[in-house]
Length: 401
Image 1 (spheres, one colour):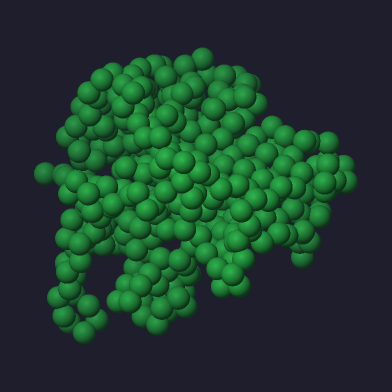
Image 2 (image 1 turned 120 degrees about the vertical axis):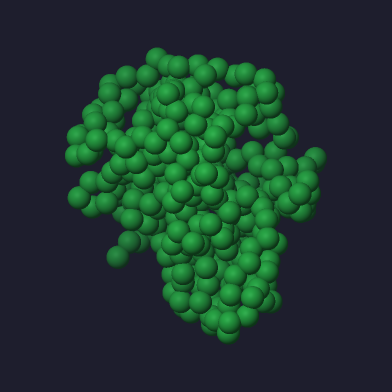
């Protein structure tokens, strides 16, 4: 059993909330650890960020900022001086009190969107619209769904910092976020971010529990957003492809340059591609974004069984408008929920049931590390020839004709 020292930063049930917290290698030395690590918590003031809790983790090489006030998303990070995240056209992080998700035809979610990693879900994600379904009593039900769900704008009810007392002495932040209400599904997200001192990796473990007494639907998409310096003209996204198709006619226009990225261009219309990836014997797979020189890379490693849908979002507009790409492991593709339900890609949780997944984000800062990871992808790809569809497919895209 793992041993750790823990500190409670927030616990709504017990009326605990720390405005500031600080521990580091000097205050809490770890045997055999030379890295200059630290965990700090503060409350941001002023502007749209006023009142946001920020938890910063530094492992000596890699640092990242967690936003408990915004669904435990990752705001920004740095690895050996390399920026992790993107430059959004919003001065974030944005407190949820300034986000009206019903704005502009139910896409107001975008006014708070500037994280490196945010979750889309939990009861639904994808584009807005009216969901119509038949309940277990045979009654037709209707519900207005907003863009990408509620979880990214829900504050955590419990946050805890942990330092493992056993090697490799992981530094962890655990958060619990509730999503529910009367006549809503009652879903609870428990997430743990962990990193070892000096490591180039963040490991993410998420568990979603159905706290209600009735079966509940669940969708979860990890919106991992990357800009410069990983994203530039000549960058490439690489993964072991079982099958891939464009989600729209607009995306089909770029199928010949599926892996490649262009530089910033004002007015660029976004393109989205839906992947089913090949996994190893344990069902694990990966995807990597590399810069033009292929001496920097960001790698996502995840289970294709728990997260069977992988989406690449290309939004290479002007720098001022948000030059970014999304690498998005998920339980579903980013279509409207009713379409995903019809395709069997909506998770059903029984009363008291749960879903969970462990995945990681890994930073590479050398050509040799990129080459080594590419060899992993090539090895997985050798098991099957990639099927690349040039047009949207009926089972994958609601926009297929």
